[in-house]
Amino acid sequence: MTAVRPVDAASILLLDRSGGRVRVLVGRRSSRHVFMPDVYVFPGGRRDATDRLVPVARPLHPLACQRLALRAGARCSDSRLRALGVAALRELHEEAGIAVGTPHAAPAGGGLPFRPDLSNLRFLARAITPAGMVRRFDTRFFTLFADEAGIDPAGTTESHELEDLRWVDIFDHGGIEMPDITVLILEELQKSIQEDESLPFGRAVPLYYTQRGRFLRDLL
Image 1 (cartoon, one colour):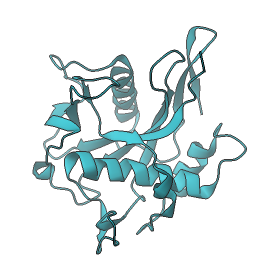
Image 2: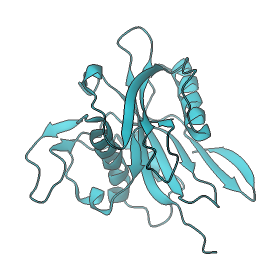
Image 3: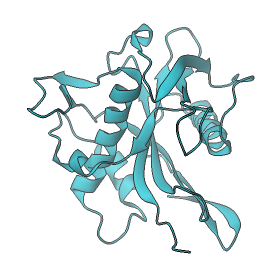
């Protein structure tokens, strides 16, 4: 059996702190998905090859880039790191109808109707899907405060990929079925918010992966 190599992916925890508590946007994956159907997750997906070519309004924060580059491989480039941020915001637009950036006319043949603004993305965590799964991803999880990006929390739109979009309290998400890794990332967010509610750009980032059957957590 051929080993499945993990592919780059990005996910975004969009945070609403307007009501005196912190809420995060989640949606239910369609039952048509082969990978993790019918569970609630953060918007996200695989990095597309064209994400490297998307012009951005503002780049990633330098400290976020430094953390992203750690253990990313010798062939990691600035364009690949930028593409991870682009992928997160592209997926947020495709799955929840939210555009973060400067509006502009979409190029002929399709494309984003905005230039992504990556400057407020914090790198929160990284997780690599264990071997043996039908799909494997090397996912970088970003956070974004809705108020910093000028996002109206009421402006989300369901898609065929994410249904039943909800804002849930990060400390009280009972009754919502989430994959184990989603719960783990949410717990990382809880700890980070408790340590510093501003979520500094340069904080250490956990990496979850499996080695010789052991589930491990390192810090980047």
